[in-house]
Length: 244
Image (cartoon, rainbow, N blue to C red; front, side):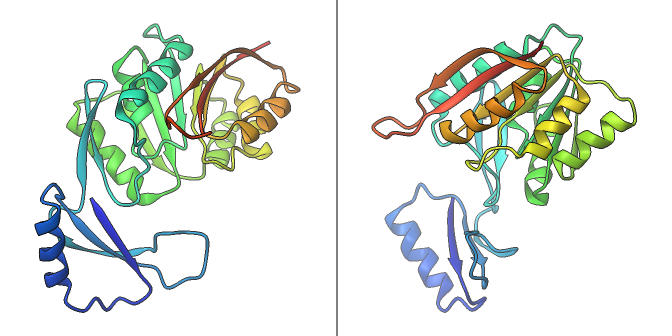
């Protein structure tokens, strides 16, 4: 997939551009024109047009097929992703009886894998509408009927669950590099799951969040780094927190 981002919605000679690009790189299956007129730290804008192909690509991971659109988050190292998500599922301790929440669920990768590998049921929560659309499509594509997706703010969603007396056994969370927030971690404590599995791409914000939540009746049981980005300083980390 190639995504071209421009400030203007006008794309002169777009057909010629696509033809030239495909001639050089025939492995490309879709080209998207994204329009972002705003001066922010966000790369992608809200509007986009498909210039070539279906507007999405697909990948197979841990026996499941996932649809990926331009705004979908997806790990870029498939071999190590299987180890990363396999560790997360192992730490979740699924036996077929657990209700699981997949927070910051994106296209539903971890949640769908959990639903297929031992969770009784899974709820996925994601703020990005396009990602939720992909997640629903991915669940249908993989014939997973014990997972449900909601387009909502995760912190608010968890607090509403706790206030209504609902129960969860495991929270899977995979926040962006900025990490989680104290409000979200407080919401997790409010819901009081037995296990929290935290997948992090930033050791600094992970350490900050672990310091905060371990003061809230949770303890760190296991930590496993996974090298997703060889030859760089970056590392993903999976942490198991148990209710103490």
